[in-house]
Length: 253
Image (cartoon, rainbow, N blue to C red; front, top):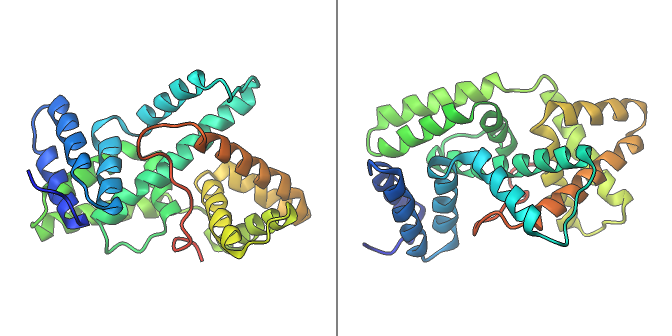
């Protein structure tokens, strides 16, 4: 068994793992391959593949987080509404993390991460099957292209009606951070992008912000900052070795 140095090596390893007939063996071998990774990128990819394709996906991550939250004395949520919001934000962060699997399996895609995450949130079983099929079909260009076409059709089906206003939603998130005293341009870019993605993955959250913006953009700031605070709480709770990942400035202009 060789060391894994590149994304291509990680894809080859994932294909070999998925060809194993037993789920328990898939889990064991994926864990072994993760330990053999010599760089962060292939390690993250295999961790995310394991989470999405072998360990149960978003539901399993949510259960792990709930167990970790129950065991964390320093994190206590007593309000049922806040509890539900915590779970929703956690799952949104997980969907953004696992979206990177699709973007690496189908590198020709030009969809932004939040668009991929929306499809995962609403069509996880379908996305999981298509990703697994594409990984197993490495070398079969026609099969991979067919899987990519089906994935892109799912993205189109989950395209939000408000997509032409996405830029204003991103600007709102960054303005809200400025209102709270954030001045570092890197933080404004990265954290603002992450908050935009969390809002954009849920039409209810996006609609709430757009409605407030129509009256006065500053009225939407508390909701954005609440989203930031809950996201920070979620990210303070360990889920697994990879952990939820935040925004990436390359994903949102």
